[in-house]
Image 1 (cartoon, rainbow, N blue to C red):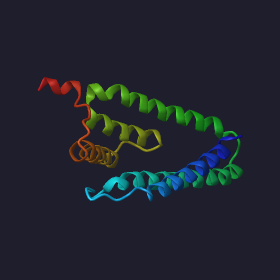
Image 2 (cartoon, rainbow, N blue to C red):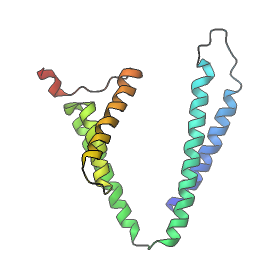
Image 3 (cartoon, helix red, strand yellow):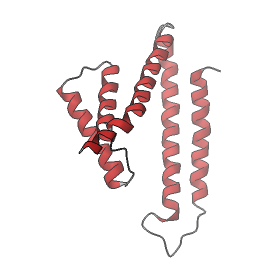
Image 4 (cartoon, one colour):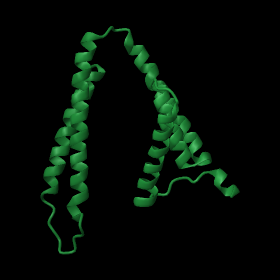
Length: 157
């Protein structure tokens, strides 16, 4: 079984799981103590996200079948090395985030990924990296109250 058929199979199984999970949430009784989300809000959101991600997986696998028929067979090793490079960028991020802190580390991750994907480091990439890092920091730290590493260098101040 090749990777594309595995993705199609996985997507179909996860789609069925997501739909079944959503159906199961319809049996959760309502309570007088419900808040705005309620006891079914988060499980339903998980089910919808699972269905959506499953559909994305299925569509990507279907497009891969079409693309494979039109591209030469020697691209597979190049794609493996591309994945290895992205994995290395992720490993470097995990290694530097405790020392450098979340905000600068995530900005470097965004910029490094853009550069690795063939972009150039210019003013636009720097603005996108900085604003993306700030947006993610606001989302996780300020809004969701999920603490992120401040970085070892912040103890100097």
